[in-house]
Length: 355
Image 1 (cartoon, rainbow, N blue to C red):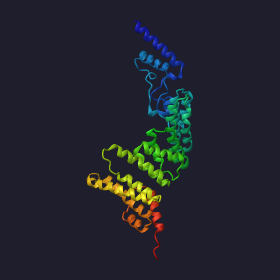
Image 2: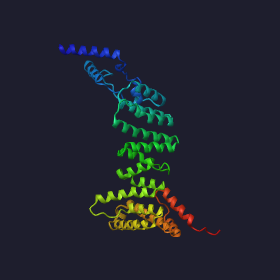
Image 3: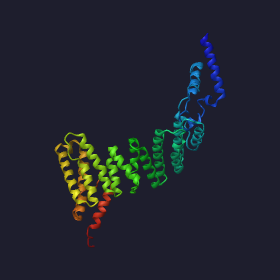
Image 4: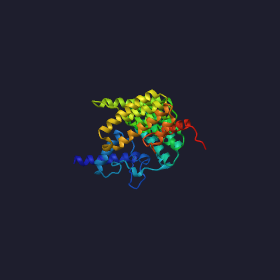
């Protein structure tokens, strides 16, 4: 008897609340969903009070209440301008700091759906400021994500300089966050411009995200900062040496350092590093790498061959450098910008052939 009275009371309370508050209005299966669901396919932040009312509705209706069972539904996510309007409405009624930032990012994506790239970038940049509390972790993660989205949208808008600035600002805000390094390294080749922020981000990525070392070093070299490129890739050599009992010269690393040294005019260091690269290549041959790991061996061999050409050029022997460059049809393992720079420098030194 008591359980029946409790069920009736729960039903009465839940019905009264659902009638009085739009937050508990029934969401029919054929309805467009709440503004939250229309914004990003997820329900709004659920407070403790709202959670209690949902429990009461489940108890009173044997779990058949649509409001009680309200859940995320990506299929009801709106598109474009409709999504933007839904996100604005959702943000206006949401008080949870984390959820407000999520809704702000969703708004940026809806603007991008309509190819409003500049507006989308601005919305992404503004999203972290939607937070309603001073939360260091939220601010840091939200800002790095915001700058990543901003950079993507600005690239689409053709604003390369602004895109780079956003990417490196986000990387420096994130600090040692490897996920951000993984995201931002893709912007390394947008231009040859090397701002202090870009340089700091690339050196940090090379140090703490080893997978990005070659890409970061090449980006620094393409920008003309060969010393920074050498610093970046030397870190990989130290990491490799620390992981093995008997270190052997890392062929690709020493060939790259030889290349960068030659390109900055340091022929002596280029020869020293090239010797180590050859030693490493001999070790690879002795282990049978040409047969067991042909892709890695071919990549290392290509780096050594390119380093030889660059070193010949640094020695002042343009003819030999040209011969080495011409011996291979392609340089698939080498950054195209570096190949073009060495080839162009060699060509400028060769005497013109008589007509």
